[in-house]
Amino acid sequence: MNPVPPEPPAWATTPLLIVISAPSGGGKTTLCQQLLARHPEMTRAITCTTRPPRLGEIEGRDYYFIDQEEFARRVEDGAFLEHARVHDQCYGTPKPQVLDKLRLGRDVLLNIDVQGAATICARAAADADLRHALVTVFLTPATLRELEERLRRRGTDAPAQLEKRLAAARDEIEQWTNFQYLILSTTIAEDLRRMESIIDAERMRQGRAKFTIGD
Figure 1 (cartoon, rainbow, N blue to C red):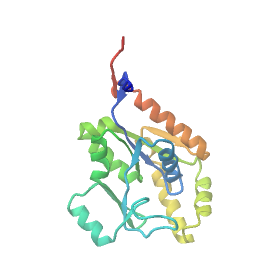
Figure 2 (cartoon, rainbow, N blue to C red):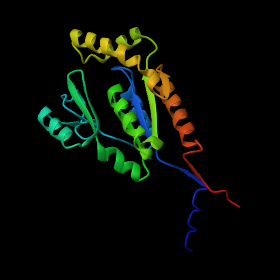
Figure 3 (tube, rainbow, N blue to C red):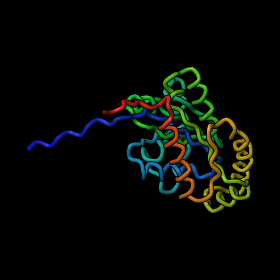
Figure 4 (cartoon, rainbow, N blue to C red):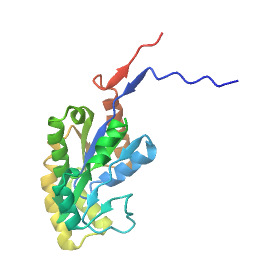
């Protein structure tokens, strides 16, 4: 006996472009890793960077590591959806990493700094498809002291570089009002719970739903 094919769902939703930004040490990389582990239907756009790999980072999984010359060539070719210089290193999101996946109906997760988020928002203002998909979230500890403690525990920066990151963090945190959502980071589990609540709410927005009432 042939199995009966499942009925199509009564409702569906258009894909989301989820932008998560935070100051250095704010927890966005961990949050993105947790989201991807729990939601296989979601995909991450992998950023290109000129900085060297940190311990444990893998080419093509964490970043695409390229040199300054190659990065400049790709900027000139218009290969990036957004790009920015952060802490003396360059970061850029390849266009196909986002646009092609959205066209295939996949939710796309972007882990980028506030400069990159501002560029994405500016592009979305002029592009109806991007604007319809975009969800922006800013993640930060409630105090600079807590942020400093996280950076010190991470142990990847010399003292001078650490102070530079903290000075930049003040400016980055002041831009939280440019985002649709704010998450005050507490624990990994709680950050994830709040982020999933945001995603659930955005998927149920009337403008994104595709719904056909059944008999």
